[in-house]
Image 1 (cartoon, rainbow, N blue to C red):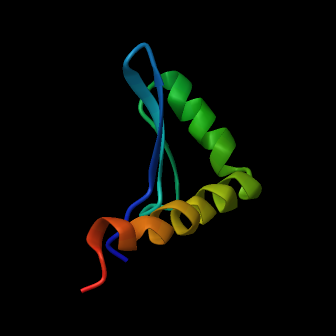
Image 2 (cartoon, helix red, strand yellow):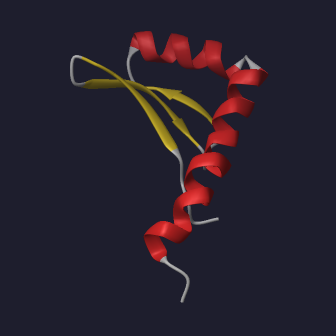
Length: 69
């Protein structure tokens, strides 16, 4: 539960939107990002796909980074 998956979108070094697995949705930081975040949040398959990335990428590799004591 302490693992967080963050997928950010940048344009010209400015983050305009982000998916945060702790929130379970996209958040927009600019006008363009807010519009896209609303569109992505209304698409259940996009949300499901990003949530699955936490399991596929983060949880799969946690043992590599932290090792098994």
